[in-house]
Length: 262
Image (cartoon, rainbow, N blue to C red):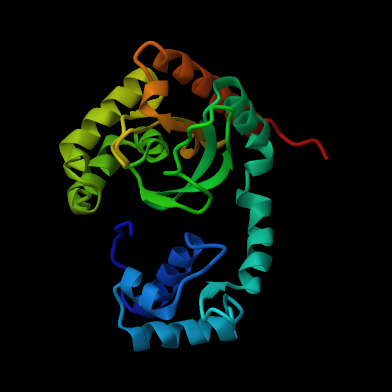
C-alpha cells in the first residue's frame, strides 16, 4: 500500500478507519475479508473488526453475507454524489479520455490527486488488443511513482518536492528505480517535455505517459495518461503521444476555467 504521513495527534482511530476505506476502494466489486484488510492496513484482526463494525453501523461499509467480504457502503455513495458537485471532473474530461483512446489505440485514463497519491477515476480502452492492466478505476499510487503521479508532482514547487522526497521512501515498495534521485530526474524530464514518461517502472514491459490538468487556481490536480506495452511506446512515437496528451489535457484545463452558464 502507499506510504503516507502520520496523522495529527489524537487522530489515530480516524486515520485507521480512512485507511481501511481507501484499501476497500481498490478491491471493488468483490471486497476483502477482515484478515485481508488487517494485513493490508498493518492492524491486528480484532482492531480491524472493531473499526469495520463501527463503519458498518454508520453505513460506510457493508458485508456480503455469502462471502464474508467487506465492501464500501451506501453512505459513501450518498456523500460521494454530494462531493462530486465540487470535485468530479469526469463529465468534463470524458470526451478527451475517449478521444485519446480512439486516436492512439491505447488505454486512456483520468486520474485525480488526493493528498500525496494519484487515484485512477476513469479508464477507456483503445483498439489495440494487447493491453496493460497496471491502472484501473480506484487504484492508487504515491505521487512520483506512476506516470500520472509524476506529471502532477512535477508542477509542485521545489520546496514541497524536497520535503516530500526526503520524507518518503519508495524503494522498498516500488524498487530501486524509485529512489529520490531517480524521481528527481523524471521530474526534470517532465518539466522539460511538458509530459511524463514511465518506462515500465511499475510493471516491466508496461509503459505509461501522462500530462497534467490544472485547476482554475493553477495547481496540477488531475492528469490524463496512456498505458500500453513497451513496443507501442517507441522513441519515434513518444513525441506524437506526448503532443496528444498535452492537447487533450490543455482542453480539459480550458474547460475548467470557462465559467458555466446556468
